[in-house]
Amino acid sequence: MSPTTVTARTPLRWIVLFLGALLAASLFVLSSPATAAHAAAPDTPGGDQEQTDYYFGGVITFEDEPVPDVTVSVNGNGFEAETVTDAEGKWRLYVPEKEKYTLVVDEPTLPDGVIVDPSLLPEGLQPVQGTTGSFEVEFGLTKTKIVNLFLGEGQRQTTSFADQLAIRLVNGLNFGLLLALAAMGAALIYGTTGLSNFAHGEMVTWGALVALLFSTTWQLPIWLGVLAAVLAGAGLGLAMDAGLWRPLRRRGLGIVQLMIVSIGLSLALRYVYQFFVGGKTYQLPGASPTPIQFGPISLSYIDLVSMGVSIVVIVAVAFFLLRTRIGKATRAISDNPQLAAASGINVDRVIRIVWVLAGALAAISGVLWAYFRPGVQWNMGTQMLLLIFAAITLGGLGTAFGALLGSLIVGIVVEVSTLWIPSDLKYAGALVVLIIILLVRPQGLLGRKERLG
Image (cartoon, rainbow, N blue to C red; front, side, top):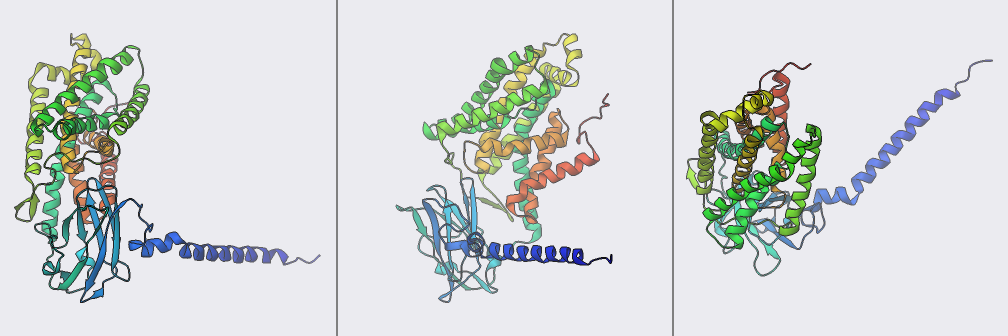
C-alpha cells in the first residue's frame, strides 16, 4: 500500500489554528479596557490608579493649547504615584489621605524650549527651592485640589550627572547610617543566639510609634519623644528576651523553630500596630524643613542631625564592643558560646544585654527612618527588614562591623541606582549587589571562612 500524506497536513492545520488563536488573543488584550486605561488613563477616573476620595488634578497648556504626554507625579507621606497628561492636557492623581504632598512635573517630558513659567503659576503656588517643576501642594476645604500649569518659552535648568551623583551619594550615606543602627543590633542578636529575628522590623516601627505618641499625640518636645522611644525600644528588647526567647532557649528549641516563632511574632506585632494606629501615615514634628544648599546638594537640618546622631551612636557601640568587659564577652559568645560559658561568662546575662541594646538601636533607627521617608506607618519597619538582612549578609553574618559596612554599601547602592533604574526598583539594586558579592565571597565582606562537616 502506497504511503499517504494525510498526516502531513495535521501539523500545518494546528500551526494555523495556533497562530489564529494567538492573533485573536493579542487583539483582545490590545482592545481590553485595562490596556486602553493604561495608555490613556491619566485623567479617567479608575484608569490605572487606585481610586480614593482625594485627588489632585488639572490641565497643562502652552499658549492656550493642551500639552499631552507630560509626566506628572506626586509624593509624600510614604506615598508615590505618577501619570501622564492626555490629549487634552488633563491629568489626575489620587492620594490616600488629605495631607501635604510634593507635585512634580517631569521636565524632560516637556516639549523642547518649554518650561513651567513661574510668572504664570496660580496664586499661592511656588516652586520648591532650587527647582522649577516641583511644588508643595495641599488640599483646602474640599477633597480635591485643581492645579492648572501654564508653560512658557525658556531654557530648562538641568542638573549635571556629577551633581546628581553627589546628591545621591550623600542621601545614600544618610540612609546607610540609619540602616546600620538597626542592622548592627540584629547582627549582635544573630551572633550571640544564631537567631534571624524577623520581628526586628517591628522593633524599628515601635521606636517611631513611641516618638509619635509623645511628640505629636501628647504634644511634648521631640527630644523627649526620642528619649522615650529609646527607653521603650530597650524595654521591648528586654521583654522579648525575658518573656519569649530565653524560655524557648531553655526548652532546647532549634534555630529553625525559633525563626518561625519570630515570623509569627512579627505578624502579630505588625497587625497590633495597625489595629491601634490605623493605615494612615503620620508625621513627626518638623518633618519637612526648608533645605540648606551645599552647592548642588540640598540637605535639611534634620538630615544633618540624623547623620550626626548615627555616627555618634555607631562610635559608642564600637567602643562598647571593643573596650568594655561586656562588649568583649559579647564578642566571645559570638565566636564560641560553649567556650565562653566554660570560661565563666554568664551567657544568658550577656544575651539579655544584647537584646536591650538591639531594641534601643532599632528604636533610634525607627525615629530617623520616620524623618527620612518621611512619615510613620504601621508597617514601616517591614519595608526596611529585607535591607537589614541584606546588609548583615553582605557584611558577614554575626559581625556588627560587617553589618555597618554592609549597610553603607546597601544605602549608597539603593540611592545611586536611581540614576539608571526607576525609583520603584531601587531596592532590587541592593539585592543584586548582595548576590554578586556572595558569589565571589560567600562568607561576606568581613565574615570568616568556616569548614562544614
